[in-house]
Amino acid sequence: MAKLRVGVVSPEREIWSGEADMVIAKTVDGEIGIMPNHAPVLGVLVEGGVLRVKRGAEGDLVAAVHGGFLSVADNDVSILAEAAELGDEVDVAAARDALQRAQASIDAGNNDAEAEEEARLEAKRARARLRAAGEDI
Amino acid sequence: MGAQLRQIRARIRSVRSTAKITRAQELIASSRVAKARDRAKAAEPYTRELVLAVMALVGHGMRIDHPLLDQRPDASRVAVLAMTSDRGFCGGYNHNVIRRGQALVELLRSQGKEPVFYVVGRKGSDWFRFRSRPTVREWTGSSGAPTYETAAEIGQTLIDAFDTKTSEGGVGEVHVIFTEFETMLTQRTLVRRILPLEIEEREAPAGEGAPRSPYEFEPSAADVLDALLRKYVRGRIWRMMLTSAASEHAARRTAMTAATENAQELISMLTRQANEARQAEITTELTEIVGGAEALGHR
Image (tube, rainbow over all chains, first blue to last red; front, side, top):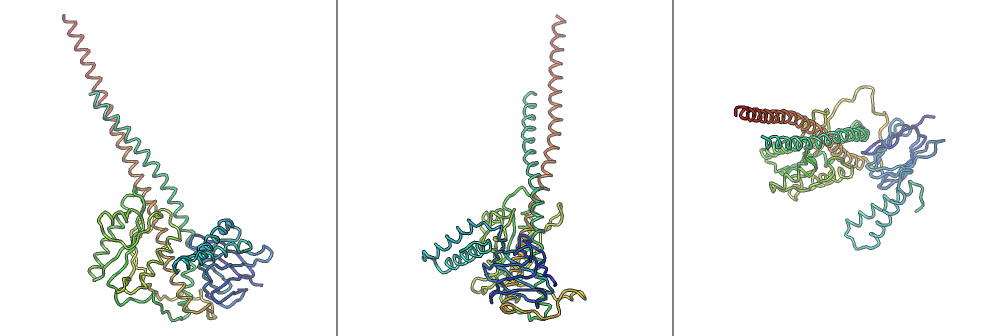
């Protein structure tokens, strides 16, 4: 069976590239699974989403993706993310800390709309990082 | 005579310690250029993929229609983003950026456009403050090793300004002055207009690229285009910041190499003077002794 050539890139560096059997990402419309010979797609990924790349024997590659973008054409899959982190690179303690702080800020409730939105985003990102690291939240 | 010799020796000591400093700066800058270039290289895949995605969109006969691509009817106010360094010791680097800025200001004014300034780097912001000229926003502390976060923030600020009507305090165009890294020895100060974006229609090389079947869009073509273009603007600013950072370090290295060489030259010149002074002192002493002995002998 044909394989997908996958590249995950962020502005700072190429995070991962290689071959895979399937890519699962979350777009604004919902989860999307890409398998070989998929029709060309351009998609906007949700803020704080988790990307899963199935590689068969090697096990899954999981990454937290923020501000992402997905493009599929001719079995080439590229994921552009303004910030991305591989699951095993996530600093779990820091992410938990960030989540707690953001949650506390939301719960306190004395923010203006903009700060609250910011805190919500922050919480979302922290959750994605924790999920990518395989932690329960 | 002894006083002169002492003075020269003190100068040699001081020049020598300056040379040590400039030499150290030179070495630091050399290693930072390499690092900055590596970072710029690491950022390339992202820019490439982004451009490919935009090209895919355009190549599919998508009707390209987006506020970021439109010429603003009222461009009486335009934004100028100047990328300078946080630290000095880098020769003409900042001076060149500011000079280009002034030329650009004149050009814009002659077209009836009023520039407003956004500044990156402490040197630039000092320049504006010293002349009490206003800036809209300043970002300092990250010129040598920029982070994407800063680039994204700058990009967002400029996009927001561009999205606002000129009559409500927005801008009709965005220009960036940055320094392109060419080689270790040459860096070029450039001005680019980044907004409104221009899409260049070019024939795709035959037999390459675009897949036959049409693209699917998640959630919709318009949303995809919007997200892509915004990323593209931020990505361009990011690239400009990286190349400017590499240029800054390269300029600093060149300036510090020259300074070290000058110091060495000065030291050898001063050493010669010191030797002459010492010789003159000895000669005088000898003459005095000989003269003294002769006077005694005649008695």
